[in-house]
Amino acid sequence: MAPNKYSILLPTYNERENLPFIIWLIVKHFSESGFEYEVIIIDDGSPDGTLQVAEELQRIYGKDKIVLRPREKKLGLGTAYVHGIKHATGNFIIIMDADMSHHPKFIPKFITKQVEGNYDIVTGTRYTGDGGVYGWDLKRKCISRGANFVTQVLLRPGVSDLTGSFRLYRKEVLQRLIDACISKGYVFQMEMIARARQFNYSIAEVPISFVDRVYGESKLGGQEIVDFIKGVLFLFATT
Image 1 (cartoon, rainbow, N blue to C red):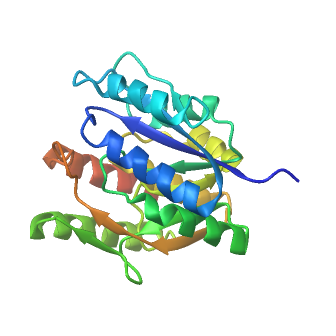
Image 2 (cartoon, rainbow, N blue to C red):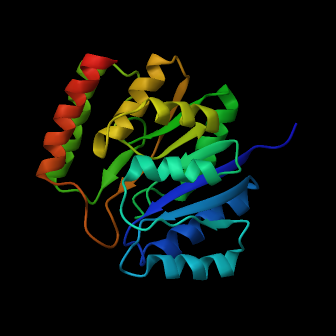
């Protein structure tokens, strides 16, 4: 049987400063652990030169490891994953943020966990074990905890962190979930887990530390909170 291969989908928008560092860390941790991998960078027309940085990284690390699949403009996270999966050659997909809030050192732990229990999904959690959030003010922490509490009560998802976006999926599982999901933005990650429960996929958790963005602007605003509440109620009604 062929060894597993892991395709990391890395959607980017204005991540010129973060990209060299995150790629270096991904390469480092995969090289140390010996797992087969590729990184698929899906840049949505960043005006800050992110794509040019990605091209330079591809020259450094090789086209077999760094795959560039840019798009003309900002089209959203869900469609970025759809676009990335089409080009992924791995049988497992890892999704993570490119802004250094997700540390690649946790990826080998995800892989080990998946292999141990033959899970369909492994998701990072900020809310159990030695997981945590760093760099957030009290308001952000309260919003995140509050959002998680509401989703736990309404959706009973069986995982402790529903809004995280650092996960490992079997490729065919991710494809099916994306096909079933209709949410956009912040709620999309929650719907993925809600649908996974609906389809009886097995899910494991690995504690992670989440660090607020190193460079650039955070993307959570008042409108996102309103959209989130609407999204939770929609999922409550439909799953």
